[in-house]
Picture 1 (tube, rainbow, N blue to C red):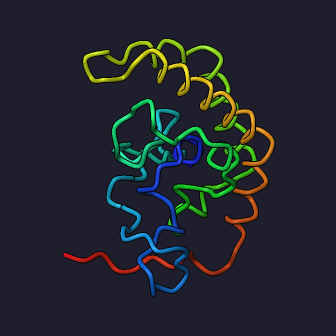
Picture 2 (picture 1 turned 135 degrees about the vertical axis):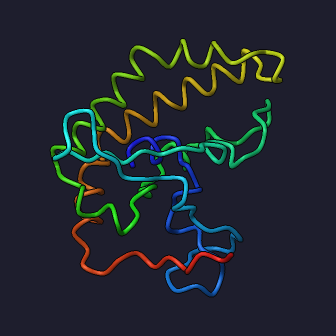
Picture 3 (picture 1 turned 90 degrees about the horizontal axis):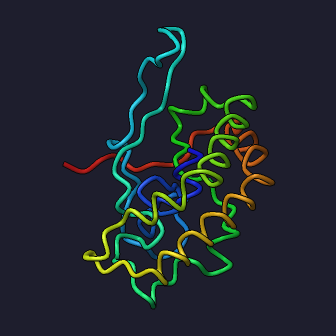
Length: 171
């Protein structure tokens, strides 16, 4: 949930429901994809569970290419207070300790790894050094913002008694 929120992964955002669906906001035409997340035993032992997320194609640029005109780093995206990845099935696993740990790990990645990760994207993919600098700045600023807000937001949302409204999966 921390990674999805940090990267604004719309694949796992409950506000992205089709118009007319209970709980929908806006006029977007996609649904969260619960099939690209699962719960498994952690390396810490069978009494511990981990939520494993895969597929991050909808992060930052909503599935579009990074270009000099990409709008991923606007202040309203940096300060987006929505929580991504909190499916109803995951609420039981949300604790203040786990949320703090996730935020702490996000901050460590920012401090140590963001430069290396962004710099490793091949220039042949059309990812310029200038766009890379914007990505780095955005990720660091977003991490700083979430460090101040995300634990409390997760605790409030996880405590809500009714599940978030997800439509049935269409075959």
